[in-house]
Image 1 (cartoon, rainbow, N blue to C red):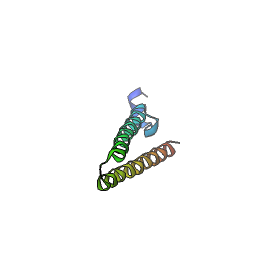
Image 2 (cartoon, helix red, strand yellow):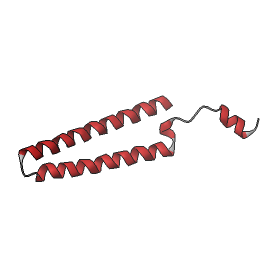
Image 3 (cartoon, rainbow, N blue to C red):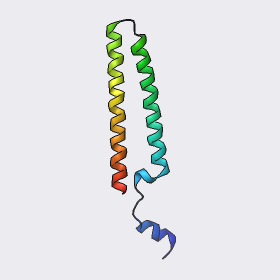
Length: 81
């Protein structure tokens, strides 16, 4: 059997085990961290309660997104196990 035929028959590598997926999860977490830092700064520096409340909503949403990212990664790792 040649190598190409063998690779075609091999099951795909689990997504989390690929360097590209690890890089993408890392990049997403970095981007969420940057958004969080900016939102927290806006929350502290906001001139009025309305702006502070909006910044708090962004902070909360970023934490939700980080939790979702961790859950996707956990399920992806579990699928590859």
